[in-house]
Length: 406
Image (cartoon, rainbow, N blue to C red; front, side, top):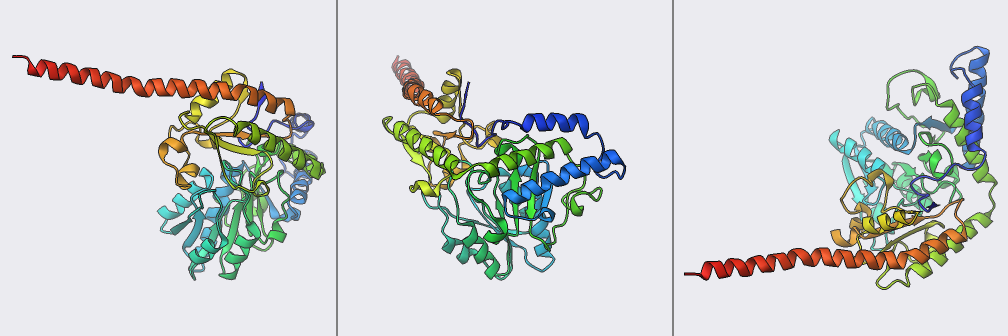
């Protein structure tokens, strides 16, 4: 099997599974307990917290562990909005390109009476800082814009967004789930108030993540319960998952710039060969430097993306058609619709996402299989589309003949 869906989840990096297994076996205590077993578990959690903090330029006290990116986005967005509302600010700003966890959080705020403004995107998925500046108001309490898009791979000017929000007295949150491990992040340096991370996007275990919360910032909890995570996220910590998260962060931090360069070169080679397929188009920023090094979103007119992905799967190659969180939906990509594409074109997107385990031979295999699969899907789709028209035409002739009979 060739795995080219790292944006959905990245395989466990070497050493992570062993660390998780040892934690499950050896760290038997509750990290909130004061006995020796509890203290050992607490020490492991805090060591991992420090590793996560180092990856994003933070201090340990600014990291709050969660069950993953979705909970993290909900905690940060709904918590910061509540804090802003206490100051009389009930206007929030986001974009039409965000991950479902962010759009869902915004929908929850709208149901609570917040006014939500969604910034438009250009046809290449870029968002101008000037658009944010125009949307900000005196009652804007929160801005939430991703650091990198989960489908397009576009990387956004987070520092400029955060500065614009701060200039109008608003808090700024970024979903950094896709950016972490692929671009250098320094949350304090970027000026963000909160940011979301997820372990399984960087080769750590699933169902564990974190929220960076700027030191001194009030963040009310989303859940009710105990006093864990500085009283921001109640519930017993997932010790083994957190340990694995910490190990993954250490491994990512140890990688040199050569890894990003390697993935960028593989991406460029992939794009060059895929775009040679007749009619193929790539979505996202034109400048490769404005996109993540391992993400390619392409479309083939006349070939529905789901069918192309299925064809590749039958050949042992894993890709996706967009966010894994919405893969069960038959609706076309909301991200591509937000770029102005109609439903048919938006349904033709295929996302290939490379990562730490991707090799040149993986790319070669994809590029060797893809042209024939696209042609086969196009032919089948054209035949399926013409069949109803032919049947309708025959029915129409028969009806006319019958109606004309004496």
